Image (cartoon, one colour):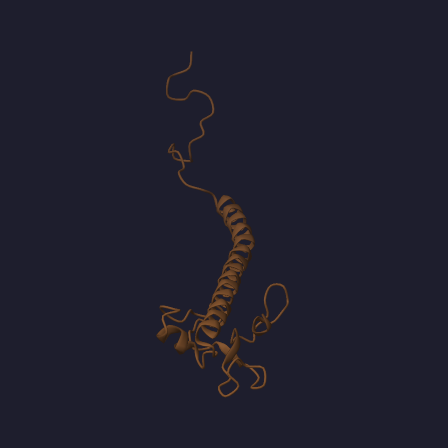
Length: 144
């Protein structure tokens, strides 16, 4: 019979101890898988941030345009600045242009003097983003 110290093949290391940890090839495979997942996830995340900013821009433009129309209807003249909307109580604060990150970058389009409600004081007809970047659809933000 065999003695109890040397039974069959052992999976221990050269000195009888079991090796702990991962081999270099295992670590490289895991790092490759992680880098592939990150390279897929980061662009998707960045696009979702841009989509969110575009949605906020659409909402802010809709709100500003609606309030400009309400102000013009109520006062019988268009506002001269966005601050007029704030001072008259139509806005608590001027919304931020999410593309530029500023409340002062809005591009104001003044109405033509001949078509204005008050021909002596033409005011704001429309408002657009101050950014010159293009949207995910390919149109410029300042054309929305």
